[in-house]
Image 1 (cartoon, rainbow, N blue to C red):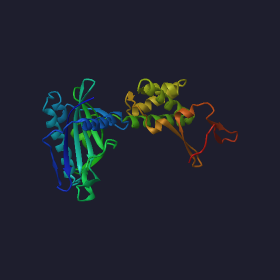
Image 2: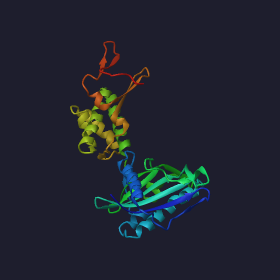
Image 3: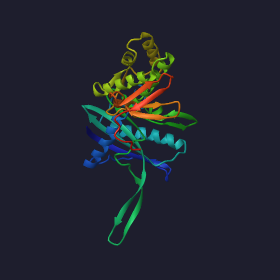
Image 4: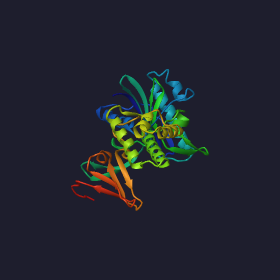
Length: 323
């Protein structure tokens, strides 16, 4: 990854105003590492959504003629619109909007990250005193999660983003995908996998199938796809879970269409917790969270149906109970 440019625009709640920077940030080794870590987190996030900017979007209109000075112009335009939305609602906050232009696999990207400033202490030793000084305008460290962001593929106008609903100008809105980018929205990987899980449970209950067995089939399929293709063809899920029952497959495919799931779900290096573990709940209030790989390990976990209609769960070869 090559970081070409970066610029920081800020909103200061004490001044009740925002400042647009006229100077690019210096990209030294530490700044390069800082930006790379945040960009990697954005690219690997399972909670990010995808979309494509509409041609009517002011941002999209600037991309076909993207030149050397477009980065600064575009960053100021987006920052102004973002800050004005907050200003309208009188929700003054200390906000940092960090914009980055970077290149990856010969593709140029334009990215925005929203951070809140933090308070922190630094040690001051000037030869006469030894004290801690409170700093109110600290940037978050490289391990901190990004509050909201978007990244645009400049050539294709495709976008990956994360946002929260805002309320201003008398209405509730999605500021990034709606007002700024005017882009289409797909479910995130996390929400898509959650929807798939809910569909499998719903179909299994409707047609009196074994919910646990079918849910495990789906999650194990997700796990195998992570190790191979890094994506799931949604239609394949119905085939894997209900391979011998066309009725079940048809019902599941109908629900997939109703939920408007994407045809393919891109998978990150690390699956959401709900896909890595299966939670078994009993009618007595007992919950057991089991890693998916252990559910398939022979002899580790046994779920038996008793003659009186109750179930028994047996865990074997446990070294010790640690909590």
